Image 1 (cartoon, rainbow, N blue to C red):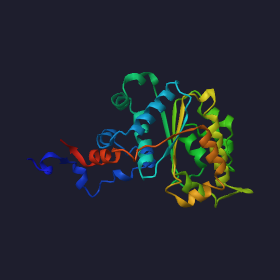
Image 2 (image 1 turned 120 degrees about the vertical axis):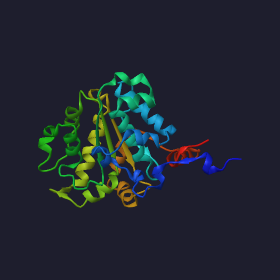
Image 3 (image 1 turned 120 degrees about the horizontal axis):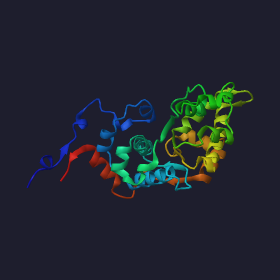
Image 4 (image 1 turned 60 degrees about the vertical axis):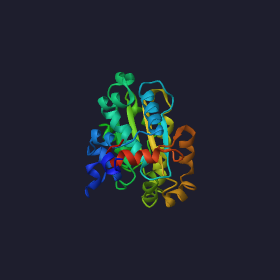
Length: 270
C-alpha cells in the first residue's frame, strides 16, 4: 500500500512563506498583479462560479436580462475570489474559451472596472473611479466639485455602447467611512448610496444591455456595516435586491469546501 505522501504531491507554493494568494483583492486586479495561469491552476471551479460565468457571458452576448449579480457568502474570500475569476476570463479570451467553451468567442472586448471599498480615499468617489478606469473621466466632470451623485441618464451616457464588467467589493466599510465626510448639508455616504441606486436602475435600461455589475454582500462579515445597512443604507439594499440575482459562490452543504482545499494544496492527487 502506498503512503499519502507518495500519492499526493503538494504544491511548492504551500511551503512558501511569501505566498499570499489567499488575500488577493480587486486592487491586485486593477494593478495587473494576478497571473491567470497560476490563478486557475490552483483554484477549483464551484457550481456557483459556473453559474456566475454563464450569467455574465450571456449578458455580454446580449442574451440575458440579468445585469446585476449579488454574491452572498458567509465564509471569507469566496465572493472576492469569484469576482477575480470572472474578471480574468473577461480580460483573457483564451482562458475564457478553456473554461466556458467557445460559445462566447464572438463577444469581443470586455472592459473590466473594479472598486474596492478599502480605497476609502478615492478622490472623486466610486463613480469617478469607474469613469477614470473606462478612460471617460470627463463624462462626470460636473459631478466632482463638489461631489454629487450621477443620475440614471448620466450612467447610461457613460456606459452605453460598451461591454463592461463592473465589480464592487467591500462596500460597507467604504460607506461607514463615507458617513463621516460632509458634503454640503449631507455626507458622502448618502451621495454614494444615491449614485449606486441610480447605477442599479440604469443597468436595466436597453442601452446598457451588455453591462454586468457584480457586487458583494458583506452583511454577515462586517457588523458595523450591517447595522448601517439596516438603517441608513436600507434604500440601497432594497434597490439592489429588486434587480439583482443572488448567488452563493460556495455551497457549504456540499463537498465544495474540500474540493477547494484539495485543489489549492495539491498539485497531483490519486
